[in-house]
Amino acid sequence: MEVGGGVIETWLKKHRMLYIRATKHPLILSIRDGTIDFSSFKRWLGQDYIFVRAFVPFSASVLLKACKESDNSSDMEVILGGMASLNDEIAWFKKEASKWGLELSTIVPQKVNQEYCRFLESLMSPQVEYTVAITAFWAIEAVYQEGFALCLQDGSKTPPELKETCQRWGNDGFGQYCRSLQNIANRHLGKAPPDVVARAEVALLQVLELEVEFWNMSQG
Ligand SMILES: Cc1ncc(CO)c(N)n1
Image 1 (cartoon, rainbow, N blue to C red):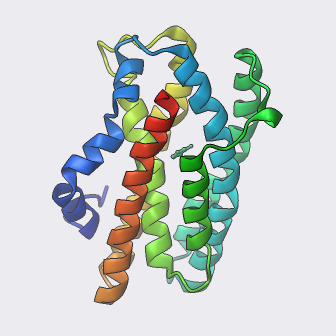
Image 2 (image 1 turned 180 degrees about the vertical axis):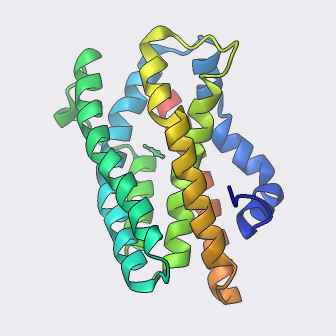
Protein backbone atom coordinates (compact mmCIF):
# COMPACT_ATOMS: atom_id res chain seq x y z
CA MET A 1 0.00 0.00 0.00
CA GLU A 2 2.75 2.43 0.92
CA VAL A 3 5.00 1.00 -1.77
CA GLY A 4 6.17 3.75 -4.13
CA GLY A 5 8.46 6.74 -3.83
CA GLY A 6 10.93 5.10 -1.48
CA VAL A 7 14.63 4.36 -1.68
CA ILE A 8 13.90 0.87 -3.04
CA GLU A 9 11.92 2.21 -6.00
CA THR A 10 14.78 4.61 -6.80
CA TRP A 11 17.23 1.71 -6.75
CA LEU A 12 15.01 -0.48 -8.91
CA LYS A 13 15.00 2.25 -11.54
CA LYS A 14 18.73 2.82 -11.26
CA HIS A 15 19.55 -0.90 -11.52
CA ARG A 16 16.69 -1.84 -13.81
CA MET A 17 18.76 -3.90 -16.26
CA LEU A 18 20.20 -6.09 -13.51
CA TYR A 19 16.77 -6.44 -11.88
CA ILE A 20 15.30 -7.60 -15.19
CA ARG A 21 18.16 -10.08 -15.69
CA ALA A 22 17.26 -11.58 -12.30
CA THR A 23 13.47 -11.59 -12.65
CA LYS A 24 13.11 -12.35 -16.36
CA HIS A 25 15.98 -14.77 -16.65
CA PRO A 26 15.89 -17.09 -19.70
CA LEU A 27 15.15 -20.03 -17.38
CA ILE A 28 12.05 -18.28 -15.99
CA LEU A 29 11.01 -17.30 -19.52
CA SER A 30 11.41 -20.92 -20.61
CA ILE A 31 9.04 -22.02 -17.84
CA ARG A 32 6.54 -19.41 -19.00
CA ASP A 33 6.73 -20.38 -22.67
CA GLY A 34 6.69 -24.10 -21.87
CA THR A 35 10.08 -24.87 -23.45
CA ILE A 36 11.86 -25.60 -20.17
CA ASP A 37 14.11 -28.60 -20.07
CA PHE A 38 12.96 -30.66 -17.05
CA SER A 39 16.55 -31.57 -16.22
CA SER A 40 17.17 -27.83 -15.57
CA PHE A 41 14.10 -27.73 -13.35
CA LYS A 42 15.33 -30.74 -11.37
CA ARG A 43 18.77 -29.19 -10.98
CA TRP A 44 17.16 -25.98 -9.75
CA LEU A 45 14.89 -27.91 -7.34
CA GLY A 46 17.74 -29.78 -5.69
CA GLN A 47 19.97 -26.71 -5.41
CA ASP A 48 17.16 -24.49 -4.16
CA TYR A 49 16.35 -26.96 -1.39
CA ILE A 50 19.90 -26.51 -0.10
CA PHE A 51 19.57 -22.72 -0.48
CA VAL A 52 16.27 -22.62 1.43
CA ARG A 53 17.79 -24.59 4.29
CA ALA A 54 20.49 -21.90 4.53
CA PHE A 55 17.84 -19.19 4.22
CA VAL A 56 16.14 -20.36 7.45
CA PRO A 57 18.95 -19.32 9.85
CA PHE A 58 19.39 -16.10 7.84
CA SER A 59 15.66 -15.37 8.35
CA ALA A 60 16.10 -16.06 12.06
CA SER A 61 18.95 -13.54 12.16
CA VAL A 62 16.78 -10.92 10.45
CA LEU A 63 14.03 -11.63 12.98
CA LEU A 64 16.50 -11.19 15.82
CA LYS A 65 17.73 -7.88 14.37
CA ALA A 66 14.11 -6.71 13.98
CA CYS A 67 13.41 -7.44 17.63
CA LYS A 68 16.53 -5.58 18.73
CA GLU A 69 16.65 -2.69 16.28
CA SER A 70 13.15 -1.97 15.01
CA ASP A 71 10.86 0.57 16.59
CA ASN A 72 7.84 -1.07 15.00
CA SER A 73 6.53 -4.35 16.42
CA SER A 74 4.79 -5.27 13.16
CA ASP A 75 8.21 -5.89 11.51
CA MET A 76 8.62 -8.94 13.71
CA GLU A 77 5.19 -10.26 12.79
CA VAL A 78 5.81 -9.92 9.06
CA ILE A 79 9.17 -11.73 9.29
CA LEU A 80 7.72 -14.41 11.56
CA GLY A 81 4.98 -15.03 8.98
CA GLY A 82 7.66 -15.54 6.34
CA MET A 83 9.46 -18.01 8.57
CA ALA A 84 6.25 -19.96 9.15
CA SER A 85 5.87 -20.42 5.41
CA LEU A 86 9.48 -21.59 5.17
CA ASN A 87 8.52 -24.50 7.37
CA ASP A 88 5.87 -25.46 4.85
CA GLU A 89 8.31 -24.81 2.00
CA ILE A 90 10.85 -27.34 3.27
CA ALA A 91 8.13 -29.99 3.47
CA TRP A 92 7.06 -29.03 -0.06
CA PHE A 93 10.60 -29.42 -1.42
CA LYS A 94 10.76 -32.95 -0.01
CA LYS A 95 7.44 -33.91 -1.55
CA GLU A 96 8.30 -32.29 -4.89
CA ALA A 97 11.74 -33.95 -4.99
CA SER A 98 10.23 -37.38 -4.51
CA LYS A 99 7.75 -36.62 -7.30
CA TRP A 100 10.71 -35.98 -9.63
CA GLY A 101 12.72 -38.92 -8.34
CA LEU A 102 15.35 -36.70 -6.71
CA GLU A 103 17.20 -37.97 -3.66
CA LEU A 104 17.77 -34.75 -1.69
CA SER A 105 20.34 -36.23 0.68
CA THR A 106 22.72 -36.88 -2.23
CA ILE A 107 22.66 -33.37 -3.66
CA VAL A 108 25.95 -31.52 -3.59
CA PRO A 109 25.79 -27.72 -3.49
CA GLN A 110 27.23 -26.11 -6.63
CA LYS A 111 29.84 -23.35 -6.40
CA VAL A 112 27.35 -20.51 -6.98
CA ASN A 113 25.03 -21.95 -4.34
CA GLN A 114 27.93 -22.16 -1.87
CA GLU A 115 28.77 -18.54 -2.62
CA TYR A 116 25.17 -17.49 -2.09
CA CYS A 117 24.98 -19.38 1.22
CA ARG A 118 28.26 -17.78 2.33
CA PHE A 119 26.84 -14.38 1.47
CA LEU A 120 23.80 -15.12 3.68
CA GLU A 121 26.15 -16.13 6.47
CA SER A 122 28.06 -12.86 6.16
CA LEU A 123 24.78 -10.96 6.60
CA MET A 124 24.05 -12.92 9.78
CA SER A 125 26.87 -11.18 11.62
CA PRO A 126 25.58 -9.00 14.49
CA GLN A 127 27.64 -6.16 12.98
CA VAL A 128 25.42 -6.04 9.91
CA GLU A 129 22.66 -3.49 10.51
CA TYR A 130 19.00 -4.52 10.39
CA THR A 131 18.45 -2.03 7.52
CA VAL A 132 21.05 -3.83 5.37
CA ALA A 133 19.78 -7.32 6.27
CA ILE A 134 16.09 -6.53 5.69
CA THR A 135 16.92 -4.99 2.30
CA ALA A 136 18.68 -8.19 1.23
CA PHE A 137 15.86 -10.29 2.71
CA TRP A 138 13.24 -8.36 0.75
CA ALA A 139 15.26 -8.62 -2.49
CA ILE A 140 15.72 -12.40 -2.18
CA GLU A 141 11.96 -12.91 -1.77
CA ALA A 142 10.91 -10.29 -4.34
CA VAL A 143 13.00 -11.72 -7.17
CA TYR A 144 11.27 -15.09 -6.87
CA GLN A 145 7.84 -13.54 -6.47
CA GLU A 146 8.25 -11.43 -9.58
CA GLY A 147 9.78 -14.20 -11.67
CA PHE A 148 7.28 -16.89 -10.82
CA ALA A 149 4.28 -14.54 -11.01
CA LEU A 150 5.24 -14.00 -14.64
CA CYS A 151 4.74 -17.72 -15.27
CA LEU A 152 1.15 -17.52 -13.99
CA GLN A 153 0.01 -14.59 -16.11
CA ASP A 154 -2.69 -14.99 -18.75
CA GLY A 155 -1.26 -16.45 -21.91
CA SER A 156 1.65 -18.19 -20.21
CA LYS A 157 2.30 -21.76 -21.31
CA THR A 158 3.75 -23.04 -18.05
CA PRO A 159 3.77 -26.86 -18.07
CA PRO A 160 1.14 -28.26 -15.64
CA GLU A 161 3.90 -30.10 -13.72
CA LEU A 162 5.46 -26.74 -12.80
CA LYS A 163 2.28 -24.80 -11.93
CA GLU A 164 2.53 -25.63 -8.24
CA THR A 165 6.11 -24.34 -8.06
CA CYS A 166 5.09 -21.08 -9.73
CA GLN A 167 2.09 -20.77 -7.38
CA ARG A 168 4.34 -21.15 -4.35
CA TRP A 169 6.18 -17.88 -5.03
CA GLY A 170 3.94 -16.25 -7.59
CA ASN A 171 0.71 -16.22 -5.55
CA ASP A 172 -0.92 -12.96 -4.43
CA GLY A 173 -0.38 -13.66 -0.73
CA PHE A 174 3.35 -13.96 -1.32
CA GLY A 175 3.16 -10.77 -3.38
CA GLN A 176 1.53 -8.96 -0.47
CA TYR A 177 4.19 -10.31 1.88
CA CYS A 178 6.92 -8.94 -0.42
CA ARG A 179 5.24 -5.53 -0.47
CA SER A 180 5.17 -5.56 3.34
CA LEU A 181 8.89 -6.34 3.37
CA GLN A 182 9.49 -3.55 0.85
CA ASN A 183 7.63 -1.08 3.06
CA ILE A 184 9.67 -2.14 6.07
CA ALA A 185 12.94 -1.79 4.15
CA ASN A 186 11.92 1.63 2.80
CA ARG A 187 10.95 2.87 6.25
CA HIS A 188 14.35 1.93 7.68
CA LEU A 189 16.31 3.14 4.65
CA GLY A 190 14.53 6.48 4.92
CA LYS A 191 16.03 7.15 8.31
CA ALA A 192 19.38 5.35 8.08
CA PRO A 193 22.72 7.20 7.88
CA PRO A 194 24.29 7.42 4.38
CA ASP A 195 26.93 4.74 5.01
CA VAL A 196 24.26 2.22 6.01
CA VAL A 197 22.13 3.12 2.97
CA ALA A 198 25.20 2.63 0.77
CA ARG A 199 25.84 -0.82 2.27
CA ALA A 200 22.19 -1.78 1.75
CA GLU A 201 22.47 -0.84 -1.92
CA VAL A 202 25.59 -2.98 -2.28
CA ALA A 203 23.75 -5.88 -0.60
CA LEU A 204 20.84 -5.47 -3.05
CA LEU A 205 23.23 -5.61 -6.02
CA GLN A 206 24.92 -8.70 -4.59
CA VAL A 207 21.55 -10.43 -4.23
CA LEU A 208 20.56 -9.60 -7.81
CA GLU A 209 23.87 -10.81 -9.21
CA LEU A 210 23.74 -14.03 -7.19
CA GLU A 211 20.16 -14.63 -8.34
CA VAL A 212 21.22 -14.33 -12.00
CA GLU A 213 24.08 -16.76 -11.38
CA PHE A 214 21.78 -19.15 -9.52
CA TRP A 215 19.48 -19.33 -12.57
CA ASN A 216 22.51 -19.72 -14.86
CA MET A 217 23.76 -22.58 -12.71
CA SER A 218 20.37 -24.31 -12.84
CA GLN A 219 20.23 -23.98 -16.58
CA GLY A 220 23.51 -25.90 -16.75
C1 LIG B 1 17.88 -18.73 -5.01
C2 LIG B 1 16.63 -18.38 -4.30
N1 LIG B 1 16.29 -17.09 -4.17
C3 LIG B 1 15.16 -16.75 -3.51
C4 LIG B 1 14.33 -17.71 -2.96
C5 LIG B 1 13.09 -17.39 -2.18
O1 LIG B 1 12.54 -16.24 -2.41
C6 LIG B 1 14.71 -19.04 -3.13
N2 LIG B 1 13.94 -20.04 -2.64
N3 LIG B 1 15.86 -19.34 -3.80
